[in-house]
Length: 331
Picture 1 (cartoon, rainbow, N blue to C red):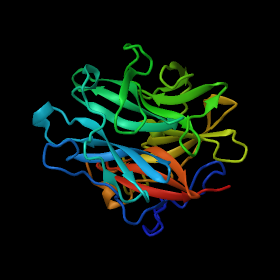
Picture 2: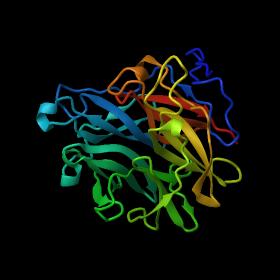
Picture 3: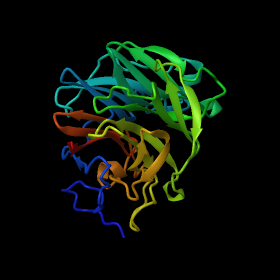
């Protein structure tokens, strides 16, 4: 039986990490670091969660998902994306003109924009997000670009084909500084649908070709989604870690969670094949702010960044607010 440790350690389980994995992670004791705010009905008054964070010029830059609290406005909770920045990665100042990415096109309405993934290359920021057309129960993986994180140009669905829908989770393969990495001359993006797995390739980070890959996620993990993809984190620079948010075997006999966090191993020599998956999650919803929220007992992450010798993992807690966990960087 898996054992939840004392909350002071902030570790999820008394498990051994595989040599290739990143961690173990320890939660910030002051969590949650960001909560929803604003009057009833305003854009992030219901939930503020699932952030994407990178560090540039010693500033932490965050895009995060906010949701309104009044379904009478749109007949559905609407997600939009806000911007915040920080000097220490803990205390955040929101941009006063949020949201910076609003729900405005047919394919984004009325559900909105969900779950940003953020990378930067040569001074341009790229965000990959899910556009949710709730009335049609359809969603598309989209991309937008910016040079200042405040003003964005939307480029629409990344495949340029409206028939490719209901696939999301744009996990771009990056290095620890959140710059995209090429494999065999092309950038790589992992995404998932209804228990389906896909890999995409691009030369410009805007236009992508999609390909199915074998889904080897064990049945006990369902449902599951890809979170983010990291490489060049170890000396050989041959490993890829594809992070997972999943049911991950369902609990420890005392509680059952909706989503816990796991890791899987891929090799650069074959970026289309998952070769190993952690049997146990590295974080489960064990804290009160992770167990009660909009979706109870849920953790989901979309970002990992390296700063001053530490990994910073930001995650959504109970689909309601934002938590932070750290791990030492192993040379």
